[in-house]
Length: 139
View 1: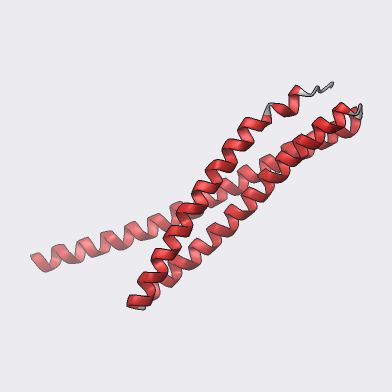
View 2: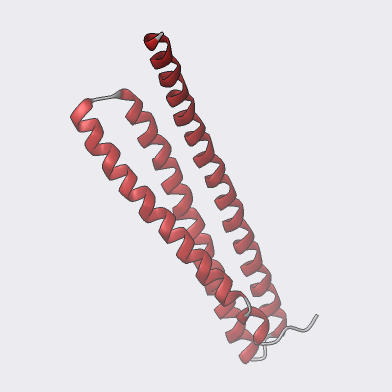
């Protein structure tokens, strides 16, 4: 298979958008951690520590997603440089590594979403229990 300079360039917009999405997720989690920390300092609720621990795991996942996406981007640029210098075989391996890193980043993203959904399910179950208790008290 022959690859040209345009082949790795096709990944540039996709990787850039992924990095933007990952950064937005990171910023949202950072704000949530700050809010939970303030709530914990005010109430000393041990439930909040569990939530903060979950968020720490998710933040580490996002860091790893970003690292893999950045390395994928770097490998795309390296591929283009190698192609420019006529190193077709090494460029193929570099591009393959770029695709592999991008797949790893997407897999970590999927895992982070699963962790996020699990945390939301716990929150919803707590809310449902409070609603049931409230209804019992009203009756």
